[in-house]
Image (cartoon, rainbow, N blue to C red; front, side, top):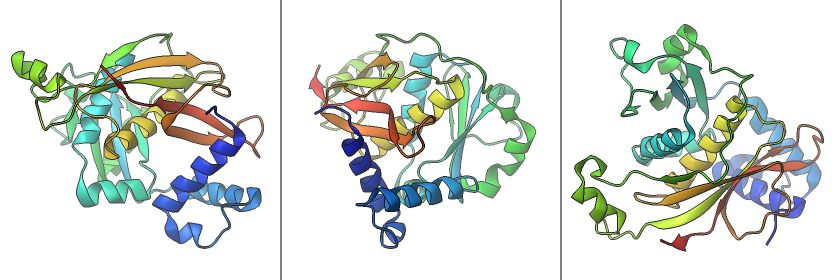
Length: 259
């Protein structure tokens, strides 16, 4: 299996059908025109989401950010997760120092080194003050070189040595950790855009149970993902900037392999 327009259309239709069945009932997702209309409606609605998460970043280091993103997503469950999924796991990225904000805002997850913190997901009005206070994370910055970066996701008890080793080998919860490749399309990609695409993919993979404690991810950047071989466990799909009637794979999560 390789990434093609046919695969991307099928994945885009599946996601809309799963998250917004009421929208799928109004348009024919099997046609290019219907799928494009549905995608445009989703994009328009994303400008004013009802439920969103906010990530405040003091600095960005890929490995640490991936670990903390997955740790944050593991905290989201039940009705909270369902409401966030209904708004396609919308997340806003702001520039700031979480340590300077803790007295004013109650974050739901804070990175161990204080480099990042998450608020929500929650009704949008609950983060209005924070979003008005801080600026968006720099949109012009370029995604740093990430080729071959391997990240181990936090295991339960990571801070306690032996407990971490047990969790990493499947002793916790009966789940055996796996290894996967995380493909990222980089052509024309800014750091801010990369954060959006990766956060969507990682958060939803955690919510779907595809990623869990002790898993290992190896990041494989490429200018474009067309032709990258699957199978794929998850895809982040969006419109092509240069060809609006075509879709682009922004990120792809590979199949699980034993560690």
